[in-house]
Image (cartoon, rainbow over all chains, first blue to last red; front, side, top):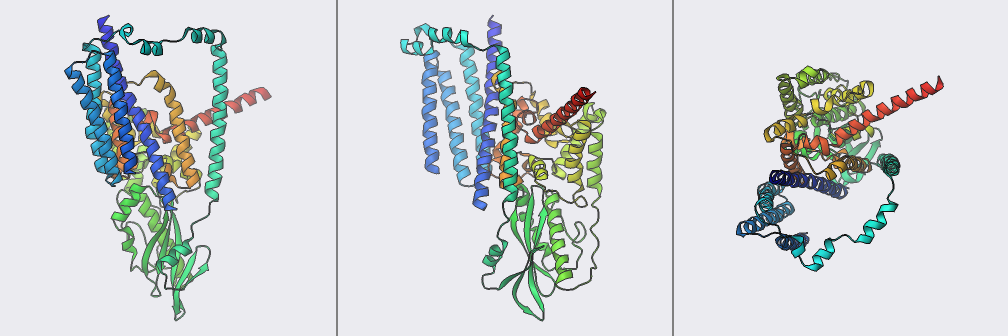
Length: 44
Length: 513
């Protein structure tokens, strides 16, 4: 029981890391769009 | 802008304090846990402040490094502390919490009982979901077509005003429409000074240049009037001062890449396209205005070792022995990273695919590599249904594969995010293509970090996107390819489209019989 709890805790820590990476990457992609659209409008 | 950053930081600090307070209510924290949590949160906030400050000062590289160094350390410290608290420290039972918070966490009985009888069956739900997906698909395709038409119908820039602004004292008269040619200043002995407008197809899209030719039949200046090139390539061309080598050349010269013109390594496609455009402008002026006989060599096929290497790699992608079996797999991967990536920097991007839809197709004689990779991949998908590019030729996949081997690459996201990841990838592809079509500018929506990875040069936010996608591939196999690559999604959709079309045709044939 204790082992199982430890295992699930271990997985949840990993999930936090990967989920964070995934979400931050998506946010950065949106940031890229924002930046390039702003630049494009500025260019025109 | 800096004030706005302070507001956001203030908000984040407040949110962190609330998180700490709520967390401390539920766990019996000791001094070690407090230190870990506060230091982790502080490092994350500090990295955001550092990154925002550096970014606003225009030092994107420093911002990226700060985010990596402090932000990543903060995240790791926070995760370790949270795991330590979960494993070692006691959790305060819910019953001992205040009645208020207990009331908040409890689910009202009326809600649970009222939902149960009205809940639709799984079948109904799936029909609804399919219908919604179908509608969303139609909406996505319709908006893309509208954006494409809008983008293509937007008029060219006013080149006359741009040139007039550069030479305010000179008389400027347009004397030809196709190509656009301006006469600059007064004519002397029947021969004038000309500015010929030439267009070319670069890696990221078309560009327009003005070639200033003086009455001695030599080029005096090459002006970049408009460009839709990927910023990393543009920067490379500017740093190499590529246009300067054309100044002083006679209009009857050959202008051949690798012979009398030096190509910029890492921006081969862009500089070859530039050479082609200047060559065409110079030779037009030589024939039409200086009445000179053509002495220059004809445009040759650019078939050299680079093209042969790409062709070999492309053909090998059909043989599973080359890309699947060890040790050939590693050799093949090293070759794609080295040749398609670092040496030629010719990876297919969503910019290349969208550019193709918009009709931005470079000439086959001078851009054989582009034709082999882009047209070759699409043709193979349409004929055989096999995607030979993704997970084989793509150099960025090779890099991720190696990193996955180093880091283990076996972690997975929470099922909720995984379930939505396909929709997110489709949305990113749609957003990317909409941006490209509306702006008629392939580089604007091409968010992949390949070009900057292999040229070791990038602009702004790309400096964050690249390290993050590489760090992600340490923990999850093919992190970028699976969740974010718009090019991979587009090729998969093309494969699905082919499969669906063939099955529809077969069904109709069966019905006719």
